[in-house]
Length: 217
Image 1 (cartoon, rainbow, N blue to C red):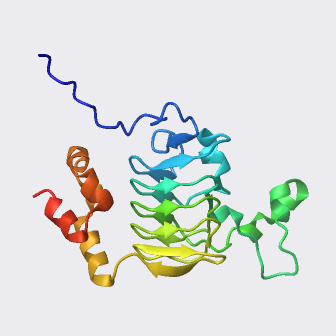
Image 2: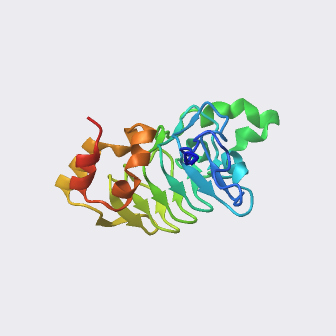
Image 3: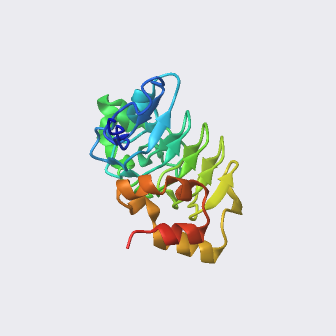
């Protein structure tokens, strides 16, 4: 009797993890900018053109700040990251960026060199973004957070919080503080892929205690 064929572990380097659904792409093998870092298995879903994520969903990214997105994140259609290049002066009568139009106005480029810069935008691991979320420059979103559809995230969101609205506010916390600390310690997203594969059901539906018991030694 022939040996059963082993089912391979999903490949984090494949652009389309669901070949029958080209609207879903893994972002790590897609992005090319050295200023964008994405962890394994983080995906973006867009029925229009998911492969255009880097230019259509990361906006005003003129550098040098970085966009960092962790592993195992789920990004719904239309999630956008507004980067620091979107800033305009607001301390004078006009907010119009005259120097970028070139010509004789380019001589005033110093007026744009001291604009506010909130630094890198950082998303933790296992974060779920609903459709149409907008993340403003320099925001940090903790591991395990959920950002509701249409939210505009203007301030940091702690780990395992659910946030929504414009501007986004915390709706509730998924776990109490003690359990959040335990989850951050177990950090399942850093487990070897084979170990994750063996414990998918625990990761998806188990208790915090179950997850701790399943952690590799």
